[in-house]
Length: 127
Image (cartoon, rainbow, N blue to C red; front, side, top):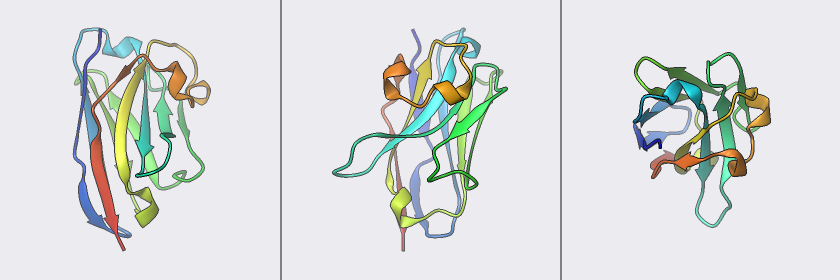
């Protein structure tokens, strides 16, 4: 079993940057591909980014491509989402998720593929 705890959310002005982190418990973190999703008020949860279990491949939603970067440090059992050039429409609760999968990140864009979820961290971008 994997437990996930997000941190690093907060309030930032449009155009600013923020990095959210997700710390995972358990010894098998490196066996899991990781993803970030977000949910804005009144909207469905949507895919943001994914990274394969060894970090060899990444995948991004079109809405964040070129602005967000997902990375992982398997030695620290942590996955990161660096968010630059933030826009008000990026405001949401951001969730990390773990998928017991060796698929390429491009195959991990659906929340149905993930086995474990964190509680989320709020990111608010002011205009």
